[in-house]
Structure formats: C-alpha cells, structure tokens
Length: 292
Image (cartoon, rainbow, N blue to C red; front, side):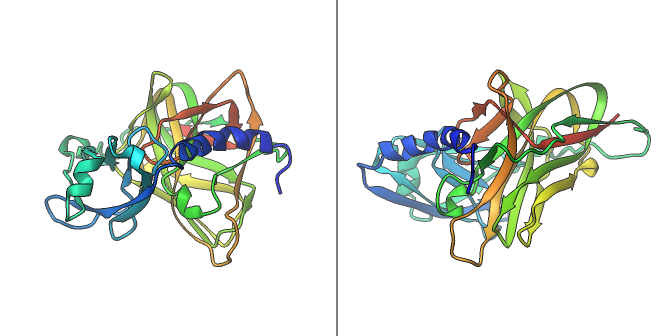
C-alpha cells in the first residue's frame, strides 16, 4: 500500500509498540468516565484525557464520556485532563479508580477567557506563506499506528513555523491528505507556543475544528483569521484526531506526504492526548498564511 514511507512509519509506530509491549504481560484495565463543567455540571466534549507522558489516552466524545485501556503497571501513574479554557487537572490513577462516580469536573480558567477583540483598526494588507506547499508522494506517513481508528483518537501531528514579522496573525492553515478511506473525519487544529524546542501552551482560547468528508484527498484549508491568533518568531500548528466514521469494515487509512529532513526535526508527533512529544526529521506538506 505504501512504498518508501514504511521506513518512516517504523519511526512513528515503534514508540507506541514498545509502550504497549512493556505492559503486555500485565492485565489490561479499562478506564471510563465522564468529564463535566464543575459549575454547570454539563458534559464537555473533546477533552483530552490520558496517562501523563504516556501513549495511553483518548478524547471525550460529544456527551463527555471517555474510555481507554491501561495496564496494572500504570496504577502508580497520573491521569491528566485538559481542555482549552479550563484548568488542567491531574488525578492519580488509584484515586480515579476508587471514585465510584467516575466524574471528572473541570474549572473554567477565567484568565484565559479574556479574548482579544477583533477590529478593523489594524489593516493587514500583506500576506506571507510559511511552510511546505510542495506535494510529493514518494515518501508518506500514516496517521494511524493501529488497526482501529479508535486508538488514533487524541493523537497529534504538526509542524514548527518561523516568522520575522511583527504583529502578524495566522490567516489560514493548510495540510494535504494523499489517501483516506473515511466517510467523515473531525480534526482539532492546535496552535502552540514553543519552549525548549517543544510545543508549550495554546495561543488562543477557543477550539478550532476542521472536517474532512466523503473520502476527500488533497489540500484542506482551514480559515483561522477570525480567531486573531498573534504569532511572533516561532510557533507550532498541529492537527489532532478527534472523531471519525468509517462505514466499511477495513483498516483505517489516512496518509500524509512528507519530505525527509534528518538534520532538521521540525515535525512533532504524539500518540495520545497526554503523551510526550516526539520530534521527527520530516516536513509535512502543510503551510500557514500569515497576515501583517
């Protein structure tokens, strides 16, 4: 199905395989619960839930429910729950397992909600494209590391971008899909600041979603200008797998073309929503347009 990219797929998948293999000797345990807004008690959709710094985790569904498996070896670990606009919460696995309600309640992070108003007072007549507009299918990577798309939920992949422009905002984000057998995919677009060469904090206080329907391949353009995301120097944009539907019973296929850059590791990947970031020596076919 894929030609030369198989060498790169090994780099993406080996970390995950090793993580699961280490826990294969221990019995798996299913963690499931619901994430709620503490004040309103209403369910929160698409919240990142997982074992901190581990490739075990997921994202809550539209009704706030989540489910994923861990090993008994993870009983001494910590669950982290996070969502833009809310304070992240850390819960020891043992404490969660002993809580009969299995309800996690997040508190609104008030200081994050002071959104910068968008006005017409600043005219940005100039634009600049940053990133890789070229598409070559000679080398490609798969978004999926398992035979089930459910195990892809919460995973992220993205690129680091640099600009010298002052007071610039991101106008749009674009990424290319070269193969896709899904009827429907929902992504979340995340924009991070950079700290110690890794994604740090989100640079805006709203969720940005993009959908891909009917097996679409090619360029996907997401207009983000209205979010007024100011960028300066370096920033990282990722796409995070949130939800999908596949009506045929077959292995998931979502393939992205890349260029190999072994000396420049500006691609960032994490297998689960609270996993550690890994840097890869490839450039995705993706770019941003900034206005300044």
